[in-house]
Image (cartoon, rainbow, N blue to C red; front, side, top):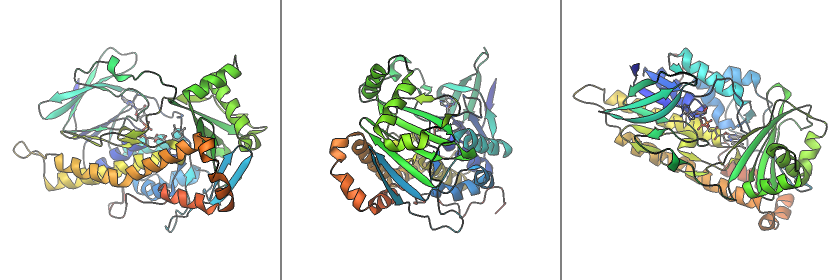
Length: 419
Ligand SMILES: Cc1cc2nc3c(=O)[nH]c(=O)nc-3n(C[C@H](O)[C@H](O)[C@H](O)COP(=O)(O)OP(=O)(O)OC[C@H]3O[C@@H](n4cnc5c(N)ncnc54)[C@H](O)[C@@H]3O)c2cc1C
């Protein structure tokens, strides 16, 4: 079976669903393909920076997020060894949204995708895009569904890669499978996440954890649950597993983190694990191509991934999708598709790639510096007395990290309101 659309989006994380909602609201016919069933939990610290909240309002899920998410995040903490350094987070200058919030990905991603479906986006789930190639002037995606023999083909002039970065990307053309998995390295970062009931965290506090070979964070999110998410180098995990023989990788890593950061012990002592541990990796921090040519674009982690120490990944996902959608919508309005005059997307690609770099490359670099300092306590040791004395440096760091920077503006776009 084959179907044609204006745009195909691969992946329904925050990036893919944001693009789907924006394009469908502008009258595009859109298919979004998601390989996993929702709701699904996902490895993530689950902090939504305040800069995204006006965008979630404009996407049409703001009220639901408001009702579900944990308390406003007004303070940041640095938990390292026995130390706890606490500082105010910078507020955003917005009438309603001054502080970030935390919300489980099983809720956020489900709300966004349901909104896309309600706006007429063709949601194919659980289907996976296995391969994509060119078919004349269109992109052809071949989809497969677990347990089914029949493949499905989709065609569109615009193909948006929103498949994240933690699993192999769909094959392009005749690309071989084997070439896509890099060999294991000691420095690979593996990520773990768990949620906890009855944890004792100060509401509104966002502790960042730093320990030799890794970093992480904890936060109070929806339903009174505390999320703990962290990354650890592969060699550090190996040592933790040797020290905790018989434990799972997640349990060994958790025992190590708990022993390294007194603050983790204080928050989780007596708490109960809610659901199983999740793991993913290796992470792929770095900048990739945002514009892939011939009407192909990448958004979210597929375009570039920041070390998650600053919790800006979802901002980059939602905001990059927003920036691309702005350009696609404006371009097609100016150049209507017809057999004589098909829109060429190269100007969109160059404008989007430029904007992407201007907005996100500095955040990626800053996150990399923070991550490397956090993982190397000896290198960071001279900084700790300074941070202890002037905690406002953490506030400044959060500002540089982009916590209150609005790269994308919803002002001209009121989804679902007809404005
Ligand atoms: C430990 C850790 C903590 C973090 N904490 C935070 C935080 O507090 N705040 C924050 O903002 N960010 C955080 N992040 C980063 C954030 O999770 C990611 O940046 C974000 O999920 C990226 O969104 P995305 O839409 O680009 O990709 P994803 O959320 O990864 O979504 C991609 C989707 O594509 C689907 N998919 C993949 N391949 C295919 C295919 N072939 N066909 C169909 N579907 C496919 C996947 O199933 C998935 O649902 C953290 C990350 C880690 C590892």
